[in-house]
Amino acid sequence: MSNEKKSGLVNLFLRNKPAFILMKIHACSSKCYASNIAKEVDCTYSHTVRIIQQMEKEKLLTFDKNGRIKTIILTKKGKDISETMKKLITLFNSE
Image 1 (tube, one colour):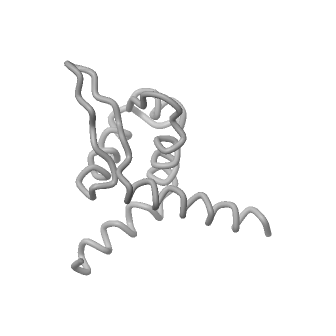
Image 2 (cartoon, rainbow, N blue to C red):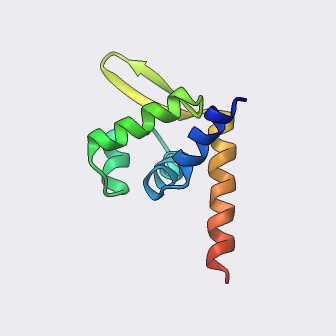
Image 3 (cartoon, rainbow, N blue to C red):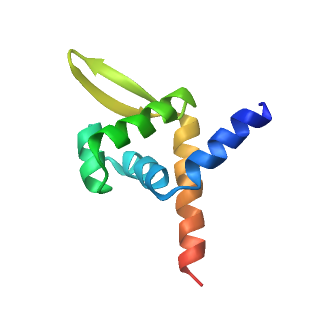
């Protein structure tokens, strides 16, 4: 992986909103939609969609398109990163 690509991933996840968006997607018990995620993380829909598109570009998630409806599905890489971030947050909060 190139340094530029690594830098892009680091910049993506060292911000609050992308981290919370990824963890909310991971926590979805049923179908996951960008509009619901935006409401849950208190973020505008358009900003949420831009973050989700960047995550898709990094192969952290995919979309399941059924007509006009797009549901979000995490890839294995996305799940692994989400679980690791959850562990980090738990470590930070335990001090």
